[in-house]
Length: 338
Image (cartoon, rainbow, N blue to C red; front, side, top):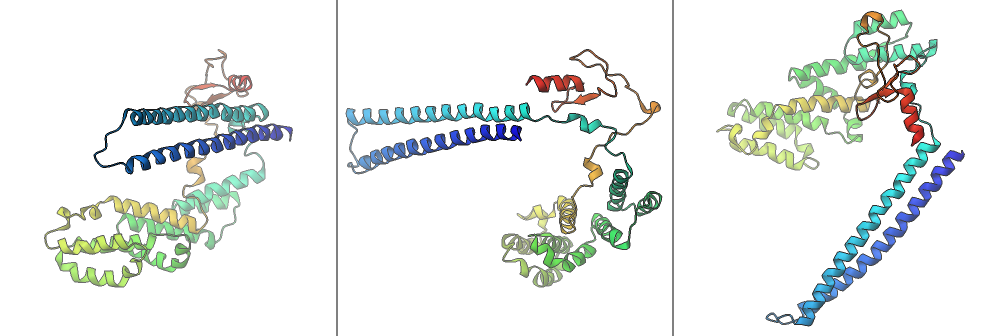
C-alpha cells in the first residue's frame, strides 16, 4: 500500500505542475492574442495607402520579439515537464517489482486445473481453424466436454470464410442478414460491404448485366444511402462508364482485388466481436515455453555478455525490448540499479 501512496504522490505533483503550466500558458497566450488583435485593428483602420511610420515599425518589431520570447518560454516550461513525468516512471520502478521470470516459469501450467484450461484453449484453437477432427480427438483424450453449440459457430464461420476465399458471397450475406440487428448494434458495415462486392461483380461482367445490377442496387443498396451515401453514389457512377469499361474510369479503384481480402478480415472481425471472441486465437499471440528435449537443442549454452556467466535453468536468457539477450540475473541487477 505504501508503494501505491508513493507513486500517487508523484502523480499528484505532476498533475499540479500540469495545471499550473496550463493556466499560465492560457493567460500568456490570451494576452498575446489581445495585443496582436489590437495592432491588427489599428492598422486596419488606417488609410489604404498609408505607410508605416518608424514608430509603428518599432511597435511591430517589439510585438514579433514578444511572440518569439513567449513561444520560447512556453517551450522551455513544457520541456521541463518531461523531467517531472520521468520521475513517475522511476517511482514505479523503485516501488514495484516486475516479475520478468514469470514468462519462463515451469510451474505456470502445472496442476490438473491449469492443464485442463490449457487443453481447452488448444481445443478452441483447432475449432477456430476448422480442424474439427483434431479438436474432437483432443477433447476425447483430455476429457473436455463439448457440445454442438460449442462447435457450431466455428463450423459455420470457417465454411463462410472458405466461401469468401472462393468469392462466393451468398453464405456470408445470409449470415449477415440473420444477425443484422446485432451487427447494427455494434456499428458494423459488413452487410453493406458484401452487397457492394456483389454489385461490383455484376458490373464487372459488362453491359449485359446492367439491368440486373440496377435491380440489385434498388433492392439492396437504397437502405444504405443515409449511412454510406458517397459510396453508393460511386457505385451508381460506375453505370455511366459501363459501355466503355470501368477499368479506365474514375471508379477503377472499385475493381481492386484487395477488396476481397478486406471483406475476409471484416467478416472475421465482426463475427468474433459478435460472439465475444478475440480476433486472433490465443495460441497465435501466446508464446509458451516447451521443452523440446535434447534432440531439439541446438544452442544449449548461452553466456551473458554482461555478467560473463553461462545461463542455467534458474538463470535463463531474457530477451530485451531492443532485441538484445542477457541473463535474468543481469536484468534484475539493471532493474534494481535504476
